[in-house]
Structures are given as structure tokens and as C-alpha cells.
Length: 144
Image (tube, rainbow, N blue to C red; front, side, top):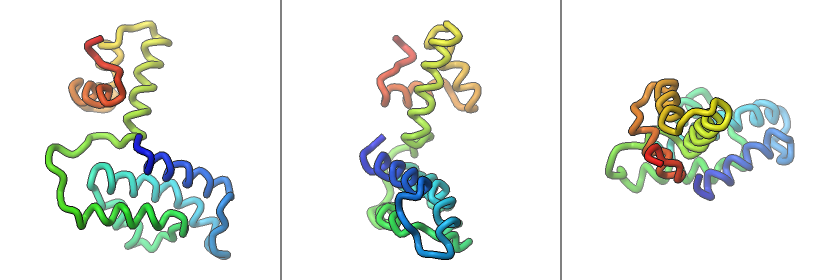
């Protein structure tokens, strides 16, 4: 997970914990929406999918002022142009969760890495190679 996404995730947690005051009257709604915006911002910056973020705007879901720099950064990616190559299947947070799930299967069920990866791919409805690519980013390979 890159530094910007770690900072965004930490900020969303802090908002939910009440460490950042929002404008009176809509503060509860803003705080609850923080995680929803987190997901939308992540999809926009990492997968270049802006539908969720646009939907938040169209539904007038209030955004916590502390999240605005991250929204601006996500919108800037539209101006830069398209990235080449296939879009990422998983966000960095999802990738980390996949890595942890596979490690739990290996440790808890005492199965091989390849079997754990196979089960995870089946659970997520993706090809084993997709999981392998994600794990190679995190240094836990199917071929070990």
C-alpha cells in the first residue's frame, strides 16, 4: 500500500474516532461517510474507476473537509491521461487482505501455498494467475 493510501486510511479512522471536528449539524453523516469515501477515492486513484466517487457527489453525500485533498488528487488522475496496461483487479488494501487470508489458510488449515491460493482464487471468482500477480507485489508467491 502506498504512503498516500495509508495516510487516507489513517485519516478515515481518525474521523470515525472523532479526532477531527466536522461542521455542526452534519458531522455524524460526514463521519459515517468517511469510509465510503475512502473506498471511492481508492478505486479512483488505483483502479481509475470514478463511478463510485461520482455517485457520492450526485447523491450529495457530505464529505469531511480533511478528505478533500485526497479527492482532489483522485480527480487529478483524470487530467493526467490513461495509464497503459490492464487495470488493477484489487486495491492495495484488498491485496493486503488477500495476502493475510492466504497466510491464515496456510497456518490454520496446514495446507500448501498453492492450495491456499487456489481456494482464495475460487472464493474471489478470479483466476489463480490474478492472485499470483497480487502476491508477487507483496512477495508471497504461489511458486515457492
